Image (cartoon, rainbow, N blue to C red; front, side):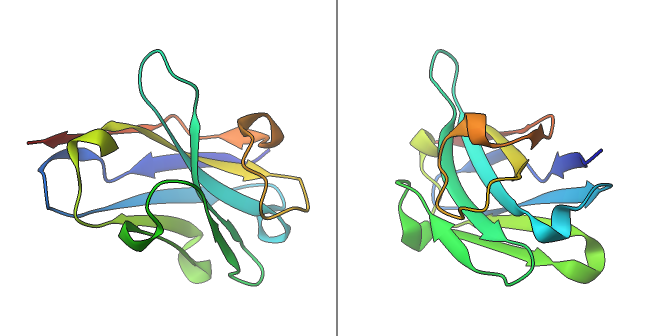
Length: 125
């Protein structure tokens, strides 16, 4: 059973940066794709980015690619999401997830099998 624990969220002023972390344990996550999603109340989870753990290959969704950077540290079993030049519209709960799907470009939340509890990001204007 894969377990994921996010951290790194918080309150930040617009224009600032945050690095979210997701510590992964258990299961065969090293042969899986992992992703970041975000969700605001009343809306569906929005795909942000994914990474293939074994190769480090990356894929980004609709949020501006030049402000988001996904990465992973194999030695620390940790995936990261760096968000730069934060905007108020980036405010959301950010979730990390693991997908058994072989497709790195899978953006559907229902294609992800394990989820963390989420970390809140709030950006003030």
